[in-house]
Every structure is written in structure tokens, then in C-alpha cells.
Image 1 (cartoon, helix red, strand yellow):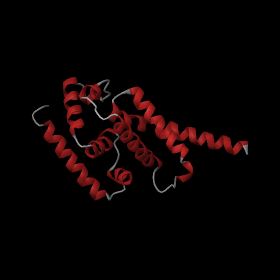
Image 2 (tube, helix red, strand yellow):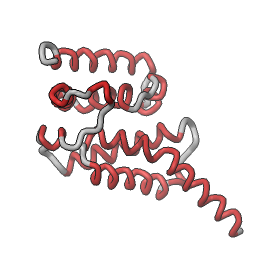
Image 3 (tube, one colour):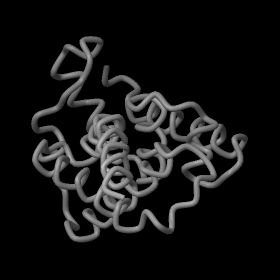
Image 4 (tube, rainbow, N blue to C red):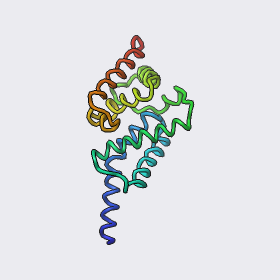
Length: 165
């Protein structure tokens, strides 16, 4: 029996190790604070583990974790009603493609001005590099709907960025 418990704990540890980085980066894109992102990411895995008996493997575990993360981030922002642009721009981690700080701030401001669903879908697609099919699983919507949502979000982001970069 101990052997089974040990292998179960090892598989949980492996699962956390495998997905922690992706979930952390996803959460960080919203909260822009390393410590807060770590706290929320830990909450995601705690909620998953607490309710592991209710988890039905019907798709990718990673997508299920993104759903939990999305809900944890929503819960956080419900508690924190006002977020300033300064808070969103602190300690930003981006690729070398966005080396210019001014451009990063402009993009962050435009992204922050999108409605939460549009912001979320942009982050999932471009920052987390998920496929439309994976995003559809997270939202529980058809891929065609996700494509439409993504096009609308891209269009709105582009409008906000016109003439600024």
C-alpha cells in the first residue's frame, strides 16, 4: 500500500512540475506580480488536488488547469476591484521581440483596456501559445466560436494600438 501511495505522490509531483511553469506564466500575464502569481498558481494546484476525486479525464489536464487558473484570477480581481496601469506594468517579463520598454508599456495598456474575455483569449493564444482547439476546450465552446472571439479581440487590440507603436 505504501508503494502505491508513493507512486501516486510521485505522479502528482511530476504533474505539478510539468505544468507549473505554464500556469504561472498565464497567471502572471494578468497579475504582473511575481509573488502574487506564485500564490495564485499554488492555489490553482491546491484546488485541483482538493477536488481531484471529482476530476474526470475528458480532455487535457493542462486545459483543465487553465480553467481553474482563469477562475482563480477572476476571484482575485473580484477582491481587488481597482488595478492601476502602474501595477500592471511592474516587473514585466517579455521576449526579446518586445525589447523597447515604451512599446511594452503601450501594448500592456492596450491589453489591459480590453474586456476580460478578450484579454484572456489573447493571452492564451499568443503568450501561452495554445491552439484554437485547446482554447475551445478551456471555454467549452466550438473552435469556430473561438476563432471569431480571437479575431474580435485582435481587431480591438489593433484599434487600441493604431498610431501608438
